[in-house]
Image (cartoon, rainbow, N blue to C red; front, top):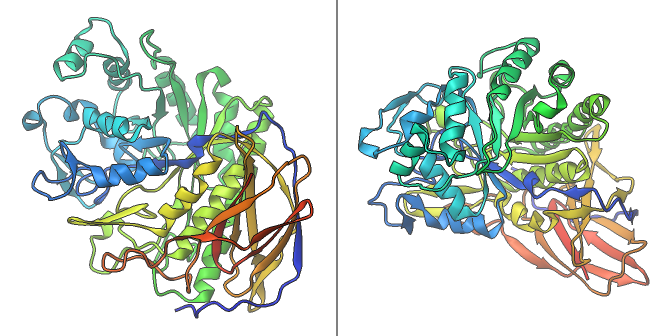
Length: 506
């Protein structure tokens, strides 16, 4: 276990908040989430037994909905993930009792009854006030199947599919705009080569029609695994820009860095294991930079969005749980990963215009964990609560040289940050201190920013391995922060060890 924090002496870091380009806005969609048919994310997460004694609308669990509405979840991706390429949407519409059961062969080989389908997902999105992001089945589906789903949801003409939708209880078109054309087509989505996938994509995209009753489709290319430059290069070279709105990227943080053997423990880890996790997390900067540079070669006007639509910490599952359900605890370390990663995305807002944390409930780096009637908010949830102030705000670039976090003979940048200006002129600065022992003293110049007061909220705890349990759900929670001062025209602040801090300047 990591020892309790101690604050050591530290030199002062000079930070400059630059005016930035008013046209570069941090898209709210960077703060998106992911709900795959995996483990207990949908069933026994969002969608519960009628007999469970919790607030519900139909079978949608409303305490989860209220928690996610509070952090302004901007989009939700469904039904996968790997699951999407075995999912046939017709199985999940119509009278529930008549829907066929299916075997979820990707995640635990459990039998699903398809009681949560298209209408139920879109009702969830309506309750969340969020943009639905659908992943079409390219791996085992057909062009006609995908085109039919789009017609069913977006047309208002009297076609057989539209009449079926109306019969199933929704007279008006849903107007679903975000469509992923396949998922991980290099892996579980078909083990395709980049060259083959781009031809398949163009075929599917040709039959992805716009309907006058609905907004234009945002067609999204299944992009690279990690730093696979060839995949991105091939997609950008072979697919016309007018056939794609976005290109995805999947990049996870594994504590050990290895997909074979142990990925690392979610709790009870050493400081060295924490250090290794943060080193792996920080690779996101280089990966995003690499793909953005390739995209710039073919798309100088940055019309195509880079969507990191799967990211987060992936550890070994909790002992005694189904290994196919990917249920893991969530510590302060995960919150530091989330804050760091979101800072990276914010700072690349000219190209990164969407992202989805994996996943929303009970799976991987979840925001919410449940146990029958009990529910808790994880440390990661609180980071999204803190960072919601950046949604659709103008990016303010930061200039500084981070001090080092040193452990043994290794070192990492101790500090990462991002800043934005809201429409009303309020400036927010999010700061993450990865060092487990040293506070970071900052003196910040803000040329062109007029402000009088500063306030803040902070997330920290005595150990980076602290986490919330159903018996102690508030071990890691937000607190107000009063350690920032205005000194002349500069901001002076000391960022405590192992903390995520957001300051508000008015």
